[in-house]
Length: 131
Image (cartoon, rainbow, N blue to C red; front, top):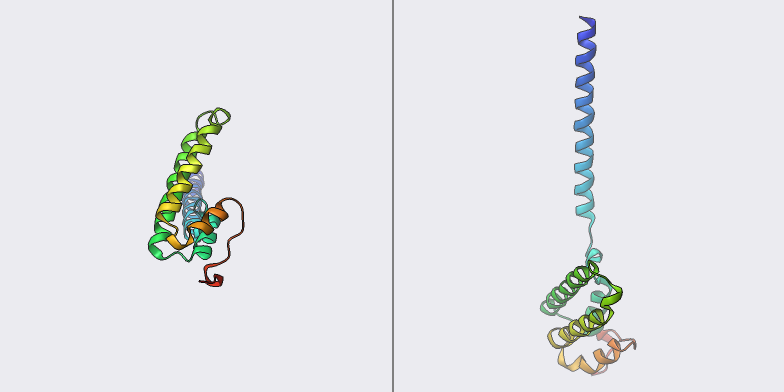
């Protein structure tokens, strides 16, 4: 009977180990999910800079997030194809989405500043602009 107990004991401990590893993996996954910050969104830094520079309200931020997510999704779809051959398509895609941001997100009184900013010039935060 001693051998039967040893085998049963081994199975028990293997089962305990398996459940422990499963639990640890599940807990780790949950912690990673809970620790995700808005910075994990595509173009989060761009979004934060635009929000500050142009004083975007909640609706405009939602619109910007939608446009940026759509842009990221399309980029990912293009990555699945030959990227070198798609350079003109990437440029076109970038310009289309920049125009969407300009039309749907940037407040009208900031359009000239956005155009300069999109061209590479720094934008001052909305709170420092002289009206």
